Structure formats: C-alpha cells, structure tokens
Length: 448
Image (cartoon, rainbow, N blue to C red):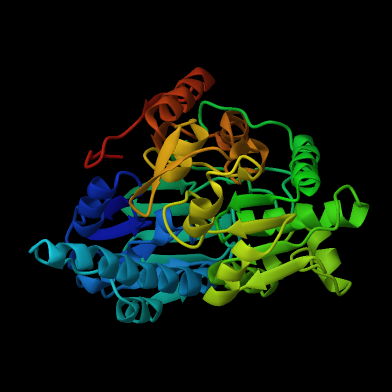
C-alpha cells in the first residue's frame, strides 16, 4: 500500500494482504493505516493477493471510489478475491470452533463474498497505453509489466500548484524473454521511481535450466512410481508449468504420466488467460491462433471437486500434482503435503518465492519438522526448487530496466522486498548515479 497525496486528493497504489506470521498478519490486515473513506481513488498494478487482497476490506470500511486496473486484472480479481473471501470464512469457522470451546469470543472474517460483490462494481478497466485522470491533477497510464497476466507498470503524472512530477510505480516488474507474456515496456521520462525489490540482491539461474531440471525430477518419480507435488500460485506460475510440461510431453523427454491441476482457482485462472490474448507474446499468440493451447494438453486433468481431489491420495503414481497455494499457507496443497511429506519416495518442488514465516519457507530452509493443520509432521520427502521460473525481475534485470528508463530519474524508493534484497538493490541504484535512493519504513512520508 502506497498513498499518494496531491491537490487535497489521496490516491492509493495497491492494497494487498500482508503474508507472514499469522498473528502479525491478522492484526495488520484488519487495521488499515488510513481512513478508507478519505481515499479518492485506487490504482491496482495486478491481481496477486499481496497487491489486491485487502481491497474488499477497504470497501467494507467505507471506500466508495473507483479501482483502476487493466481488463485482465479485473477478471482475475473477480475469481481471486472471491476465492480469498471463501478462505476467510472457512479459516475463521475452523478457528472459532476452538475459540468457542475455550470460552473465547469468536473472530469475524476479514471480509465476506458480499464485500467482494460490492468491490467488483467499483472497478474501472483501463487498457495499456491509455491515459486516464483518476483524481484532480493526477493522471495514470498503464504499461505492460510482463509479470503476470494484466500486470501493469503505472506511469503517474501529477500537477500541483504549478509544479509537475512524473512517477513510475513498478508494481511487480516482470522479466524479458519469458514464455507466454510480452516483455516489460520501457517507460521513460519519470523523475521518481517506486520499485519492487523481491529479488533485488539475487540473480536467477538461466531459463535453459528449467526444462532439464523439471524433466529430471519427473523422471525420478516415474522410476519410483511416486508423486511430484508442486505448490504453485494459481495465476502465472501454474500456467508457466503447464507450458513447460506441454513441451516436455511433446518432445518425449519425460514418461507419459498424468498431470493434475488440483485447484478450482487455478482452473478458472487458466480460463481467464485464454480470454486475454492481448497479453501474450508472439509465440503463444500464434499457437492460439492455430487452434492450440499451451495450457491444456492430453495429459492434463483439471480437478475442481473435493472428492476428486481426495481420490488422488489413493491413486498410484507416477503423477504430477500442481496445487495452490504457492507458499503453502492454505488451500488443497496442505492436504497433499500432510499425506506425502513424511514419505521419502515423493518430491515436493518449489517454483516460486516463499515469504518469511510461511510453511513453504520452512520447507526450503530444511526444517526437520513442520506443522500442518496444527499437527507436527517429520519432513522425509525430498524438497527441490527451481528458481529460474520466477516472474519477478532479478537484481540484474531490475537494474537493466532502470538504466534504460532513467534519463530524468532523480529519486527512487525501494519497496516490496526483504531488507537484504531492498538494500542490495538500493546499493545498485546508488552506484548507477541516482541522486536519492530511499528504503522507506511503513508509515514514512516523503515530499516530492
């Protein structure tokens, strides 16, 4: 959440759910650091829950303005925020059984499906490259960020008291030459940058490693007749995996094992992808125009019903199960981990960033035991990871992007990254010659 104030108006850039330690997340997500009724407009960079997930709370507490986003982002929010509301209800119901039993007051859900209904009526779709005034003296233009479907770099032009400022907000910056989506658009002319730093101090392995490593893991479970369990975000990462699995099946680099996408949200998100070809690169667009799809091939089975999900546990391997959530903080992936984490014949493969204090982070850090549904489980399954699939630009890619766009850049704010990554990127930006680089603290204010 980044709040821009000008001409007596307040524009909020993103409104995401904080993800981390459960108690801290509970408090931070329920107590917004501003009065929702005083916000005049919201500008949403993309649909990932850490950017969009607290919008229904904003509406619940009185926000009645517009939410500006690309058409693909609006469609993804329609399914993702409804899924989030369902999870809020389900999680609170589970916790309240114990609280009532212990004589404690029950919790209320963070928000409900009715709050999402109200929010969806406040969205204002805005396509790439089209300027739109969102408040007095504040005009935005979305540009393709290449991160996930519909993700946008936001160019913000502000006029106030005869002065002009041009701000570039990255949201999450994508990577060049990635499959499916187009490359990030270079946006020149900004004097102020607000940039993410998720991988600001790291460099991703080359993409050429992905297919070979994925094929090796799949062929391992083929030999063992076991299961490859992949926690994956429903939007972006699941579709990337299907793209590579399609290629591996077509080239016969792996055995003919079934692939199960066990997530209703992932199934709906894949359908949304196919409705937005304006976001695709030339290769993917050409395939769709020829009547094919990189997201659906004969070996793929989309699982939506709970009973079909449970049936996977009794089905013999080999197989691949792709399931949400990507950080193992909820969803059906927890049931699969509970069933398979204690068996050394299975493999759990991580293909995305794991935030601090999440179950996914504990597993890749090598904790010998983890808690799943409140119970201790010894980790005996093999834990593997492929970092090259990240949809976030790494340090080298962010710095290259800024170098191409920095003609007038005087100031940069480094946000959305753990401190080591934020500091690493800030150091690189200073070395580039940007006069003022800041890593802001929550609640810190700055005057442009």
